[in-house]
Image (tube, rainbow, N blue to C red; front, side, top):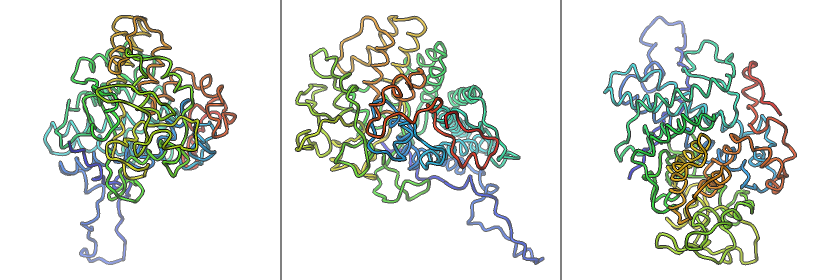
Length: 518
């Protein structure tokens, strides 16, 4: 199946000022001509093709090197209690609560997210005025609402106190005086955007357009937004819609993390990557790398040129504490982790063992010995036989939202409303049955939390789970050994659960206030 080609980005178009005509004191009108080869805001947003280019441009920041292509991992996985990032550096700083307002990583990720917001605003503002097929127009506007709402969801969970911008910058009289909005207002806008997307998006796209968001993606994200705010009844209602639709679990858990099975029946939304062989950084323009460069920061020691990290041992222990119905190790452990282990698990016709790049066993990878646990998910070494981690050899999509996550979030919402009911059990047991784990007959919230770790680790969810459960301090700060490879957690101050507002934003807008703790 062909992925949507996000390299069609119109990139800087939305940020260009209208080009002024130089006054050369000449009355001859023939000298005052507009260059037809230069795209200007007034010359765009005229045709259906412009609408299509505009929405592809709104997707493009997702594959910017500063967002999901690479740097976002330092604001998500590197902050949780599984990941123990090697070395004290700008990349591990946020994860140990030592990030600063002037750090490039902080500035870059914020900027990429707001690029998505700004471009979505342009689409939402201009496309309704284009003379085109009504269904195509509605679909594109729906995509704009989804992209804006999704980016604001990420901004809230990382920075909390952000400006709420819902119009093109060109339509705002004094953009340098915009205020940060109360978080409740931003949450309300995210809800409204996803509801609009729900109504306007199609249930599916042709194979040639795979990767574009659907009404199912909007519904799943809306349920997640409600859950994050503790609106359990509303969350349950949205998740129920997904559970009564066409989404299903893949038979093989590992097939959610390989390029071979992208955009599958379990996937609600994923970031589309391409192993295009381009060596330039994954900038927000054509002819730049659009591969999954973050695999360099997941890969085990010795298989990456980056600092990397190890997995804290408690995570492996959690996997090993419970056996399958066949008295074997949970198959998800082999997909998620690489560790010193001689056991195997028979699963879906395969014999699973601890393997990493080049199909190496632990002893082959570390003949001189190593006692660490490393990551394995998304490395996809088996599909194309990758010899080592690289910035441009993986086209493996990142799955943002899977049906398994929906089932677990439904179980959580139902549990918070009604306790250990049969419907909560059915949802969590569907996830467990897929990997041959014994069914629960009753559940606790702790068991729901632990199931999320086993199912979703290294999928950029764990830190935000801890944040919404108000467990960042008790789970990470108070266990400084979880960040021992990068200096512990002594840099923590109250409020640093969220990232610092970038210094360049504070300098440009004196109305902005820094987050507490910085």
